[in-house]
Each structure stands twice: as structure tokens, then as C-alpha cells.
Image (cartoon, helix red, strand yellow):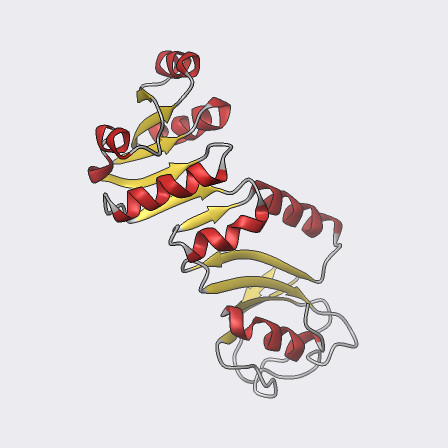
Length: 221
């Protein structure tokens, strides 16, 4: 199974190593000639020198047979072009793009990139979770940004604490997918009551996100 990685440096090196260990066939496209030489010496992978946003190079890399294309260059515009070409011209079903500017993440989703990830956002989320700085943590967008999975921490005084699932007036387009209580995870049913300290996995559309948070927290975060 072929996976095309557009970019260079240590990130691409380690990505390729992971794919190779899992039985995939990575093809790397990198604009830096010295990096291409180093990658070809260190990895059992095809390495092409050039601009991965050029259709002719993507075709040479085997985009028509690839199961996924990853664009991890330091330039957001290049990453977007690579993913759009792979999807529209070569019909690659899975495209993944590094978003260096977190504000571009939603734009990438709207423009058809399967997965757009921001290392800045991921690191900030991990820090917030470990430090307990936030009651609401956006975990990840899914279905090309059409749904969002959010972790919500409940505490005493919130309108949802003490109420059963039946009593919650959750808006259309949202649901509580799981309750994390200590080390136990349950899929909630109607009679189940929410407690102080519960962590909820809220699944919602962008339109229902605010109303769902108001229902649980008494405010829109």
C-alpha cells in the first residue's frame, strides 16, 4: 500500500519509518536535494526531489495508486495545494495536511482536506488537559469538520449536574457519547444522572455546539 509524503526533515524521516514498520510503501517528495540524499540512504523508500505541489511529480510518485497523501511542508499554501490536487486530480481518498497557522485549520476542512492538524493546537490542548486549565477541550474535528468531539468537565453548580439524560434538553445535532467517571467509561442511557467531576464526550455539529454547551454549562464557551 503506497503512501505519499510531501515534505522533508526529521518529521518526514520518522513518519516514513513508522509507515515502513507497518508494511506501507512510503514515497517521499522533498525539494531539498541534500535531504533527499540523506533520506534515500537512511530509508528503504522511494525519494523524489522536487515540488510536491506539481501534478507531474505527484503522478511520478504514484498518486493514482496511493491510499493517502500527507503534506507536511512548512508552507500552508503548499500543503493545501498538494491535498487538493491529490483529491481532485488523482482521486486519492485520504489527504492529510499539516497546518502551521492554526487559524487555517477550519479553512482546510472546508476546502476538502480529509484531516488538517495543527501541532500548535494539539500541544495547547495537551497542556490544558494536564494542567486542568480548561473545563472545555476541543479534541478533534471529524467528517471533514462537519462534527466535533469535545471533552466537557462538570463541576458542582452547573445546570446539568444532578440531572438525568432524560431531563437534559440537548439540542438537535448533539449528543453525549460517553461519561468518564474516574477510571470507568460508560455510554449513557436515559436514567443515568450526571455528577460532579464527570467528563463528558460531547459530539456535535458546529451549529449545535454553542447551544449544547449552554445546556450543559449554562454558558457558551
